[in-house]
Structures are given as C-alpha cells and as structure tokens.
Amino acid sequence: MAIPPVLSRLPEMPVKKRRELSVEAHRLAKENGARAADARQVIAGIAAFELEMFLDSRKLVGQIEWEPFKKQHIKRGFDHDHVVSTIEYENTHKTKRKEVFQVYVLGKKCGDLFHNVADARIFGSEFYEKLKVAKSGI
Image (tube, rainbow, N blue to C red; front, side, top):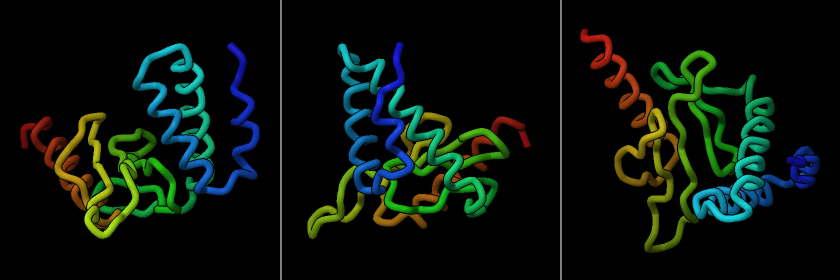
C-alpha cells in the first residue's frame, strides 16, 4: 500500500489544514469504507509527525505528560512512552456550544465535553490515576 502523498506535506502544512485533514481522516476511518485504510495511514502519519513535533514541549499534569495545545485535532497524554489519554477537538466554540473537547482514557470516552483544554487535561489525568490505583488494588 502506497503512503498517501499528503503526508509529505505535513511539515509545511498550517495547523488548521492539518486539523481539518485529521478530522476528515477520522471520519473516513470510522465509516470503514473503501478509503478507510488510507485514512488510517493519514491518522498514523499525523500522530507520528505531532509526536516528534511536541516531544520536548509536553506539560505534566498529574501523572500524564500532555502535548501542548496548538489547535491540533488530537492532543495526546503520555505515561512514560505510552499514550494513555487523548483529548479530541470535537467542534468549534460557538455562542451556544461552549464545550468542545472530549477526553478519552485508555481508548474509552470519559466524561462530558469540556470548554477548555486545561480542564480536560485535569479530568483525564485524574481519571487515569484513579484507574491505575483501582488496578493496583491500593
């Protein structure tokens, strides 16, 4: 399978365009149609690009190191080298739609939507810490 050509343009691509590409790729991947495999490659390519881009600028909140919020579609949170939580930019803020960030912990949707990334990070970190404590039996 050939690598989608759009991935070669990521370094020069404005963040808004990269976010739009990510949103569209996630939509196509969920539909699981003829373009789903290419969409998954685009998602993986964007994730790899952003992983490298934000490696040295993560912010520690609780036990999770979060990528900075630079208007990207998905913000990843790490426990050491493993992605344990993500914050997905679901929609744009509007007058009647203020909560736009969805938290996922270990791949599962958690809680309601959040108005800002800072609150979503805190929630994701606290939720993950509770899961770790419950799993360890402490």
